[in-house]
Amino acid sequence: MNEKAESLQKLFKEKMDEIKLTSELEGLRVEFLGKKGHIADLMSELRSIPNDQKKEAGQRINTIKQFIETSIQQKLEELKKLEEQRLIDSAEVYDETFPCDTNTGSYSPITLVQREVEDIFLNMGFSIEDYSEVTDDYNCFEALNIPKHHPARDMQDTYYLSNGQLLKTHTSAAQNTILRKYAADLEKGLPLRAVFPSRCFRNEKIDACHENTFFQMEGMMVDKDISISNLIYFMKTMLSEVFQKDVTVRLRPGFFPFVEPGFELDIQCLICGGEGCASCKDSGWLELCPCGMIHPNVLTAGGVDPEKYSGFAFGLGLTRLAMMKYGIKDIRVFNSCNLKSLSQFTNSSFTVPEEKKED
Ligand code: PHE
Image (cartoon, rainbow, N blue to C red; front, side, top):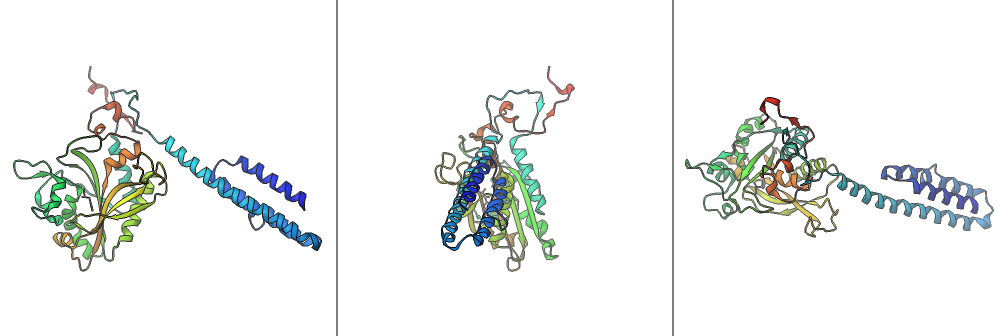
């Protein structure tokens, strides 16, 4: 029995050394610890050995079993870390020195991220809406429960046109129009599920993290009995798809006059896995998406009865998402017209037709 136990441990160590992927570990676990595995075989052999040796042999088998269990657990953690690191290393990373042929057109990193997120929402039954970049005070503020002179307006100063219209400060400016568009469908029993991406503008001082022109994607879902759990589910699914791995999210209270309750949705930092690093300023979390349950006043303004329906809304920062996804540290790159920086992310570049090429 002792010899068998010895050689089993040896066999396990040899096989363990060959394992390179977490997916291979399960096979090894079954082979050794499964119902018909090597350990179970040894256990059944216990019956046939003399009584006075049973105790010692049983203990020996248990020790090997524990050794195998802890080794597999340790290896799993080691491999997970390695796989995560590999994923980070293989991500397309922004490279300022990338060689560039300016005759070859390419998609902006924002367009790529926008399309990817649109696809994910299309698959979840959402429609994609378009909305103008120029709007008015009513849509951008009043209809969103932000009356004139409300302090919340201070955070969203913008550019006004001479005719009194303005450049929208957030995609929430389309909420009223979208609610009106679908209010009648709700009465027919059809839920409202829409995302609307767009460029937004704010009168901001520009630095590496702030721009006066940036991209957001608003999302809304309204139906009977929509709750915060629906919101969390959709955000988690969408972010896991974008980053191609399970993300951990958390909600913190956040104030926006058009949602109640309102939240800031954070994701656990993908670079350090939550332990704290420079990217997440040592907090382990990254702020990604303000959201909340649509305020009854907003539903009413959009022609939807808040007694019958409820819904959630979120404002995903597409520019921020693109920065995280491609490791772009300076937001000014996006509006820089620097083709060298902007053309390197595209998978499906197109070539400018001969006749349009400059001499
Ligand atoms: N529109 C808000 C902003 O840009 C974000 C937001 C959208 C918050 C939807 C809650 C719900 O700051």
